[in-house]
Length: 133
Image (cartoon, rainbow, N blue to C red; front, side, top):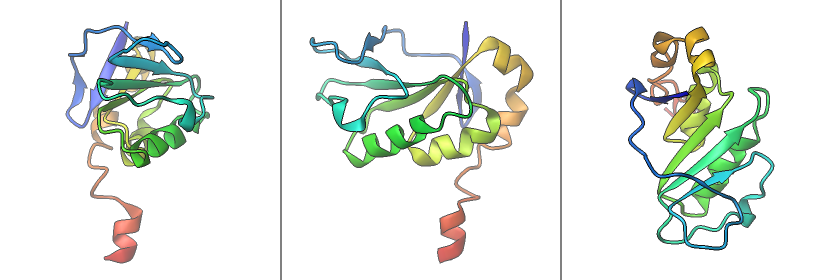
């Protein structure tokens, strides 16, 4: 099982559709993207509603780059980080373009909701905004 996290804390996953692997030729509404994918190799058809980017380990930050590049390419659908993302990385995940984070239950048990909520005010602590302010 997994736990979904948003700015409201631990929430119920409302996306019931399965995920197609990257490279599926048919029209899909949700796709699973590995961390080593090239941003330009991720198709963005009009019907695409969700992209879930894999984080195989918390030290692997390639997913943050993928999220940023997808947003810069114009993707406006839901973007989900999935895997070994830790609470300390939540603000970076949101700033890079992710809407939500999906983690395994064992990680959620080690990092309960209060640790994630402590970082849910990620807009208030934006380094660049403070520099420009």
